[in-house]
Image 1 (spheres, rainbow, N blue to C red):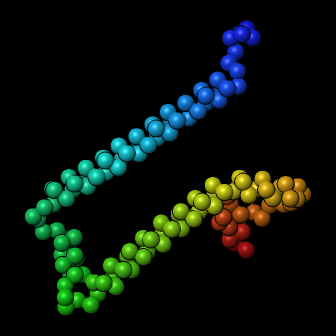
Image 2 (image 1 turned 180 degrees about the vertical axis):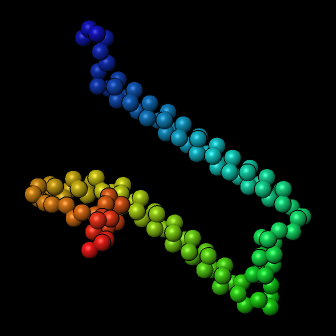
Image 3 (image 1 turned 90 degrees about the horizontal axis):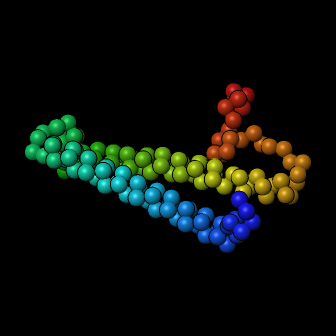
Amino acid sequence: MTEENKPNEGERALRFMVISKVFDLAKQLINGVIWIALAYIGYLAIDSLAGKTTIANIVLKYLTAEESDYGIPWILTCAFAIWAILENKLRKRKTESFQGRIKELEERLDPNRTTSGLLPSGETHPEDRNL
């Protein structure tokens, strides 16, 4: 390529921004299509079970019966267990996403710093669990 045909910094930055935005849009579209597909599959599942007695109906009637004292505690226990699992996964993902920046800042402060041996997600290294 000759010197005249090479894109300058402004054109390169613009191309990069456009390509980046196109991929961001594609990611959001795919995410939207997945959510719509999941909603449709859920609708089909509910529609196919409508009017039929299933184990789910029996358990739901048992848990929500007025004379049953087990309903609310079980529902709350399941809800909080699901919340705890999702919160734990989110915390590990966040820790892993910050790991690169934290490592860079720590190396700036002390280049001779050694690693703690933790995994990027913040978990203990599997070899250290046996000690």
